[in-house]
Structure formats: structure tokens, C-alpha cells
Length: 111
Image 1 (cartoon, one colour):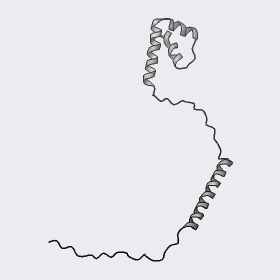
Image 2: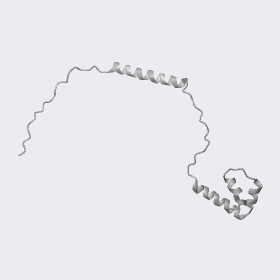
Image 3: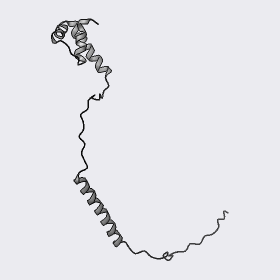
Image 4: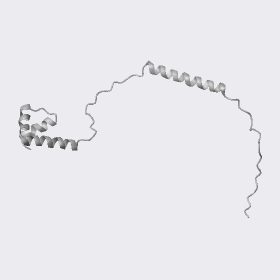
């Protein structure tokens, strides 16, 4: 590559460059063609989902009093529902219920 066109690569790489040198390189039709070729090449080579290098820090939220209050309400509701269910439960019967029908089994005898 020509040294005059290295400023185009520096421009695309976010490296420092002289604006006048870049303007001179882009004034030439070959420089503009090189810029378009490098942009197309970068689009082909780079992954579709580029991950930013410096991701912004996510603020850490503390589990404040609202969370504690919500957990306490949930615990009280569960315990209350359990106790109401115990009181409303039907009494259990002792033993098995009486049979309503008796089935007699006979041995299988193929004829």
C-alpha cells in the first residue's frame, strides 16, 4: 500500500491522523476507491454482533426494604393459607368404605 494512503487506514482504525493529509488522500480517485474497499472489507470481516469493548457499568441495586416487605407479606400469606386449609379440611374416615359390588374371578379356560 502507498504511504500516502496509510492515513485512510488510520482514519478507519480511530488512530490519530492529520486532517489535511486525509483530505489530500481522498482528493485522489484511487484514495476514495481504497476507502470504499476498506469499509467493505471491514464489514465482511467483523462479526454481526460486535460486543463493545468498554461496556458501561451497571449500577448495583440493593435489596432494599421493599424487597424485605414483599418477602414478609408473601410468607404471611402462605402461612395463613396453610392454616385456613387445615381448618377447612374434611375429617378423615377410619378404615376403607364398604364394598358396593363384589366381582368373582374365574380361571381362564380357552376352548
